[in-house]
Length: 80
Ligand SMILES: [Zn+2]
Image 1 (cartoon, protein in one colour):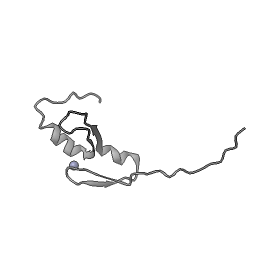
Image 2 (cartoon, protein in one colour):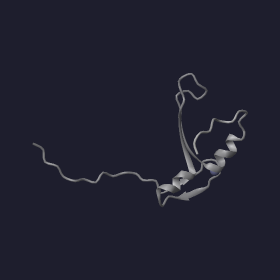
Image 3 (spheres, helix red, strand yellow):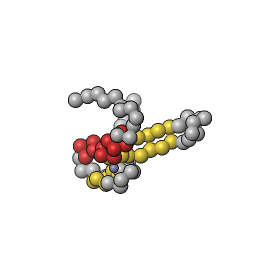
Image 4 (cartoon, rainbow, N blue to C red):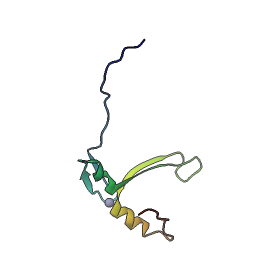
């Protein structure tokens, strides 16, 4: 038989988010604030141009839209 007790586990919580491209920062006071930014985590494979590197960055929706406009072919867009 096991006896349990409640413990609070330390947890990192984001308090602000900054666009890596333009530097726009937003304080995160509720969950909806983060939705104006997109987080990217890219792991490059061995033999790629960035051999085994991992990149993580956040981009605001405005910068993401500007970036996508530079594409020769538009991305597939689904949803409402
Ligand atoms: Zn931005």
